[in-house]
Every structure is written in C-alpha cells, then in structure tokens.
Image (cartoon, rainbow, N blue to C red; front, side, top):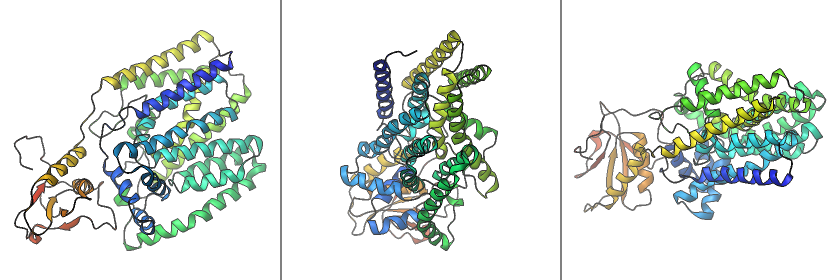
Length: 475
C-alpha cells in the first residue's frame, strides 16, 4: 500500500500532529474537578509530608504526585499549565508506541491504523486532559510493553525494563497487571527466559515494599478502600459493554453520569466493522509473523482484563474501570490495526478501512457540534470567587458553610490562598444528600466539620444545591 518511506514518514508525522492536536483541543474549557483538585492539593505539600498524605488516600502510589509537584515548581498552577502535564505524558506515548509496532514487525498499514485508533480514542483524549495519573500510567505501560518486546524477541534491555516497571507500579497499582502479562507471555511462549522475568518481578516487589508498609500504617486507624471505591460497579453485562465502547469510541467520552455513555450510531457500526475484519482475517491469514505479534499483544489485553474482572468479583470491592484498564488501550489499538490491514481481499479491506475512517469523521463532527457542558462543580468555583469579593467587617474569619464534601472541597480549594476566609462542612442536616463517593481527604484539616449547634457566628454564609434549578433561590 505504501511504497515510499518518505510517504510513510509524512503520514506518521501527520497522525502524530493529529494525536497532539485533539488532546490540546478544548483543554481548558472545564475547571478542575474533585479528583484533580486532590492531585494539586497533594502536590502542594512539602516533601516531608507529601508521601504520608498520599498514603492515607490508600488507592494510589506516590510517583504521579511527585512528578506533578516537579511540574508545578517549573510552571506554576495555572489551569493550562496543570492540564499540559497529562498532555505531555500522553504525547510521550507516541515514541514507544511506534517502536513497539516496529519491534513486533507489523506491516506499515497495521502500524498506521493502530496509530489512528490511538489518536482518536475518546477515553484516551479525556485522560490526556485530566490532571490525574492515567496519562503517566499509559506512558509507562507502553514503554514497559515495548522494552518487554525487545527482551522477548532479542533478549535485550531486561534491566531497563525492570527499572521502568518499578516506575510503573509506583504510578498505579494496575501496573502490576502489565508485569503479570509479561510473566504470562514468557511462561507460555518462551519458558527458557522465565528466570529473568521472575527476578525482574522480585526486584519490583522488593522495591514496592516500602510503599506497602506506608499504606498499611495509614490504614491502621480504621480507614479502608471501601470509602474510596465502594461505589464502583462489578463488571456485569452493562459495565462490560461500557468498557468495550470506551475502548473503541472515537473522540467522545462520558464526562459525568448526566452524559450519554456512548454514541450508538458510531460505536455499533464501528464494533461490527472491526468484528467483520477480524473474522475475514482469520478466514485466510498467511503471515506467521503477524500471527505471533497478535498473540503477544492479545495477551497484554487479556491478562489485565481477566485479572481485573476476577478481582472485582472475588474481592469485597470492585476495581473495574476503564481509566484503570487504560493499560490495554495501546495493545487493543495494535490489534485493531492488524485486523483491518490483514483482510486478504483488497476491495473489502479498503472498504472496511474507508468505512472506519468515515465513522471517525462522523464522531468528530458530532463532537464539534456538541456544546461544552457546564458541570456543577465548576459552579462552586464561581460561587467562591463571588464570596471572596464580598465585604467582611467582623473581627474573626469570614466563614462559609457547605453541606456536601464535594462542595466544601471545591470552595476551600478556590479560596485556600485568600486570607481570613474559612470553609466549614456542616454535618447532620436532614434532607441534604452527600455523595459518599466524594469525601474530604484523610489527614486534611483545612475544612472544619461542624454541626448546627456549634455555630456562634453573628453572620454566616451558606452554600448549598437545590433539588432543581431556581434562579430566585438564595445562595
């Protein structure tokens, strides 16, 4: 299909430009939300308290917060600079992804199509714009997979792979699933190298012990992960389909529960197209090297999904979620590229690829025509700004009382550097819904919890949400 190396280079560079452009598009349209605020809050801690603060959260290792702290020390805390942090790591994915495709000896069309799927995936765009650990997780997982492929095919770079895997598991606990995939691949296909990967895994485990000890200490006062992730659904039919749609959905992503989970007139035809390509490929597939590559990347897809699925059903709480399983998105993109490029009949192959690109275009047009949603958490930032500008004549601090952890945390974050302003959380009020998925960080005393009987201020401010919109309702 592509005879000229220059043509391939131009197409690859063009796709890289598209990849970066769609991640910069609408980058600052929305404010920081609850979890992003926690990221910045943690990174603002001094070095001697950052690790303990993160350990008390229980569910994430500290490397992301360390990297974010360094990033903030370079460029500050403006919204665009903070959002460029995940974009930066998302952009870094391109290099190891392309090298991984070359290590797998993929045909040029398969590599380019895989890059297209990677570029336009809606969930990857979402997490490339979110100040959380998922973009670094994607980056380190792709680097790990690439280095493992070098070890798998050439026997090289096992020590560099070991170092990267330590960084990977200190970025997110799901990094262990990537290591499990590597062990499984060697055990199934190249058992002669099993000693090397077991030593690699042992070193990673030994390096992770200090963090395990820190988390166990943090949980000794009764805190457990149920408060963090007890709301997450186990992977039944609905959640499984939602994950499938997230893997294939171009450009669109569900930002909140108020949004549609998928655009069915895009994802259903796209799913059928990929399925048809897979069937046609298997009917007449002659290249053994592509077959080996598909088996290997398929293992890097199957092992994390199966482990997450099993743990979610066997453990007291579910760990299932597309954002955690972002580690399989790059291998899935490669698989899709192999499916479409390996259809033997040329007119059918071109037709399937052309129809796929048309669906991508339709999804992009739909996304462009969709207005940006104004999310409720962004309203608290505006409320805080208006409250900070109101005069205060009292001797004590000006105090604002919120009724929800989510609101209190957003209000505190927006006014945390404003002198003589305090935010409190009023508890025990009947009729007020407080989403348990959002709670003030453990070990955080910036928002004081109180009950009505303890309020002695002569003048107070209240911030609350009504069940439905009412422009005449007071603040």
